Image 1 (cartoon, rainbow, N blue to C red):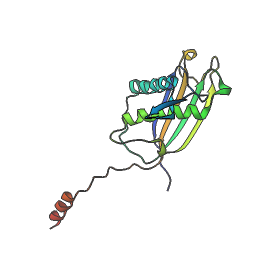
Image 2: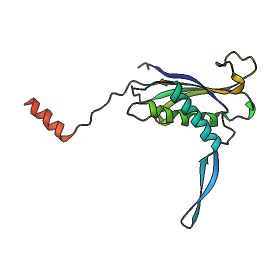
Image 3: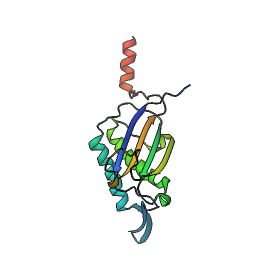
Length: 176
């Protein structure tokens, strides 16, 4: 069966800086009773970046995802203006994906989207050079950019009504 892909979201987001370089998580310790337990937490840079993305999408992209799909595919393009060689693409993608899932769950109507539903993904990073024509904003010197596309990768999931004992009895009495 041929899959029908539908483009659901295609957006380019300006951000001040895309965090990467293994800086998006930091180690910490917390005391639980008499024990000290190590844990990882999101850094302030990461929180700021995620908030930038969610706020931009919430204010500039007025959409509601009404249809539910079992699987999705994603595309990420990162336009960076410095430290091209030291930027970790997989970390940039993970941080951005987390922010986008937060936003997607705000605009999806009555269902949850999880990154385990992403069955295919492509990502790339590009260096913004002066007079770069691919950058969609004229004041590109002030920003880095993330382009994100979300496609459906399966047929719609129809909403299933919960069947209760009461509704079964009503159906049976209707048949008589």
